[in-house]
Image (cartoon, rainbow, N blue to C red; front, top):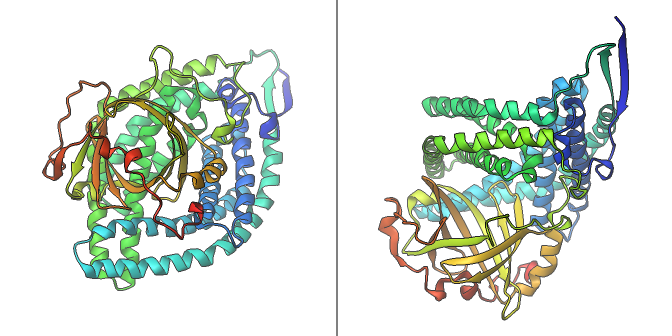
Length: 514
């Protein structure tokens, strides 16, 4: 019996990768995993360089935060890729693991400060002036820590990544495969491997949620959060390859965000207690308990739907593993959305529709106040027949997403065309919206199959609740937590359209408004 040793190479830069990561799913596992890892490594190098450029003066805090989040995301995805595919990659490199773990600690420490600062926003609805005063003092301390830590973080992170990146790239580009002469070559594809792992994951996620619910301990919280985050990181490079994969990924990402929110709130409560802010610590602990309960109930109620979504994702991965799209446009998974060819409208479904009901509220329901929330800034470009909307959505972890949207039609059922946009393009267009902007905090409250969005406007005294539907005649049952706060249905009142309410930006000291 003879043994053959094959030496092969994978492309070293995303520009020379396969036409898309969709094709990586049809490659042998040892090759497809390397393509994914190299793509994340290239993104990590680029994002760390961008972070270093943004620590200098004259750059907005939001830009530094976005650069930090981009670097942290690439680092997390790279670490998960190396861990999940360690058998296929055959990279037993403790030195690299230690370096990436150190880099992760550096980015996590800074992102934690941002998350704590964001979590303090809910204290605006605190029941006592004393608690609000404690929150304001803690916020000032956190902002000081953030401003002081950026320069040091960029230098240390660049040092760690620069040494590690070159070494890891060399090991990923070239690899050795040992085969026996005369044996048929049967390599499992990356897509089939991932389909098998996704197929086994729902039961594990459910077990982690049940254990977390039973004990409510920090250890079980950490285990559940890491399980959700690892699963998201494994699938996220293939989000755009199939709608079923994107749908299942959105479920697990919501779980990961919810658990991170619980963790960040508990950490903030511990920090408040150590600094002598007892009332604030009690409020934050209560908030963390409410968020935990909401997450567990949401996961339980959606179990049947989750099974369907998971099975659809498995089937999609199996299909993609067999047939790669040879005509897909060339791009790296880390390309900015604006560099992609626009997605075609769904076949057989006509134009994408936004069907919603909107209600005026006399206040923010407590159930919504403790739910996951995001900050939204919207502005409309000048126009008469066409009014294009720009939106920047900032999550609790500091990450932001920019979109451009055009809506046409009646307020209760409109054609909605929306696409992500590059932050640089957003920044260039944003000053044109200075005369038509709104700012609000959106609280996301799942309720069965529906998702209620409760908007607290930051530039006026107004609270609205919206819910998106699948068809115009769908019956809406107002949840018990919301019903006492509803004033009336304002779906068909033009005065409550965001585009109508938009006004000149009152934040005169906002550099982006100039």
